[in-house]
Length: 404
Ligand SMILES: Cc1ncc(COP(=O)(O)O)c(C=O)c1O
Image (cartoon, rainbow, N blue to C red):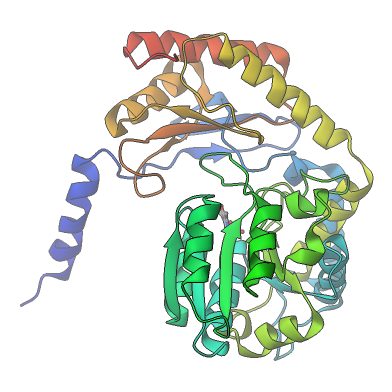
């Protein structure tokens, strides 16, 4: 007899042995309390400060966004009632699609249940539909993009991270008549670095390639209206497909793509991950719509975020803590060991009420384990000071490698 349970349980052993078994932190993020949250541990709970949320601008607790969500839920109920094709297209989905298209100066948009689904479904459909196509992807693209490319069964080549020379060599090695897709990300979420978008677009033009850009960690934050890095550089028109989501800076959930009308129509008509799943609840679409509208017209959220990012980076640069002084709002703290990374996070949580989730393999390569800190507009200068002091104290206590 096959013991399925034992076979699967055995698979967990290496994760535990390598200190990369995922332990979830059970939180209650209460409206009006951010960046504090209640941490539940067994029967006890304790107030902690969250330093790793992707709710970058605190929009998930924004009163107007909550009101849009609640009103739409009262009006339309909790579920959409079907897939987009079978009774699940609601006025809110259609409006939201026009809004994201407009945000990125594109003809059309398409909304998915998540950013993951948007990437997986769109890249899979593109790779399948463009006959004999080859996909060139940056080595640090998100898992959802990798899965989409794999599922497309198109030939795939990986270029070194943000390495234009490597990308060019690879582009030049294919017949000029062969369809080519360059898949990359604007803000890389684990390193916090930003792609050379203009230069990649120039190469795409030279080699007649289709560009696919993930702006998940950029929309809402970069650009005067939150239009992402490509938009902030005036390059939206040079990207063939821009993908984003509503789950990070917009504080809701769901994903999208924007492109030319016919290209979006192709994905709408062929992408399995779009077609065969129940659409987003209308209330979610209404909340996302409100959040985008707010961040299009009000820069104060972004300004406060950047004030805090600059302050935190400044404090860290005066400490012995090793961190990446990236150009983005994401601040990686480099530990370089899975066990010590977990221990550092645990000590911060238990001794100081500071919550930062450790990031281990396979999210980052082995030896590059880190804490990924995100500050929000709700953090105060005092909280930032206390974070850096606690980090430094624990860093020294664990004899971690000091900043040069
Ligand atoms: C770069 C990138 N793309 C896509 C996604 C998936 O987005 P979502 O969380 O909306 O599924 C993530 C998620 O963290 C991401 O980091």
